[in-house]
Image (cartoon, rainbow, N blue to C red):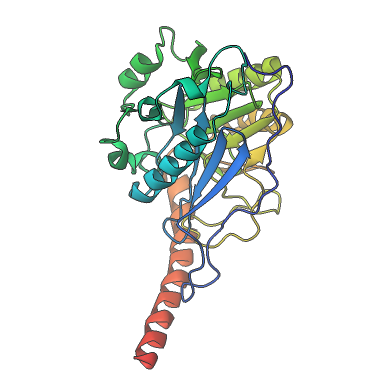
Length: 330
């Protein structure tokens, strides 16, 4: 059972956000931050990929859940995850902190401690590192298609059904949230009051594949968050600036003025209300905390790509300057 009061999360962190110039790349490949015991958030560097996704690792008494494997080769991510799991298991000195009567980590063979690799949804920037985990012992990598997701978690009434997922003294809640992608899931952790929404709600551009599905999803997310007393809403990216309604360009490699990736339930409600006003209007619609990109036609693609190409050109000019500087020093 979760504690009577959610474990506080340490969300006061300055995340890596890319380098000011391609002539001097300063970000590490990953930033690892322990939000709370058994709750680890990892960000991939914008020096590696403009997507810079966040990857969440939740650990329990018997197994851990890794949500997504990021946008690049997963070798470094696997090394980090292996290290976190090793530290988690080696530090065991008594009963599991989340349920003193249920699980004793010391009673389990660390080699048998299971890792489940699942995905917030099946887009490439969330599954690119899967291969690095395919041969890992005691590891299950959940498939990307909707049938695989339903079968693994045991859904019989997708997407409305909320199913439990037991980690050992720590029970998560999982449910479908299509609209951005048909396979999108939300994961709620009652232990910390964290609701993970993948690419469905986050401070950035929400690409809408199915407006009717997203309308339903946002209604269910708000109702769930209010019913469960959710404290934090977390997505997989940050694309907004600290200026309300202003996002970084598509492909941006440097975002020093990012807001926090953590949103409130009040912001979630505002996102729901905002989408109701534009759900049936293809195009780009800006609001304080998000930008809705409804549809995939020219009203969306042309402005995004034009602004993104300008951003890319600036980056490439910097790369040429870097090459010239190297030639001078050779």
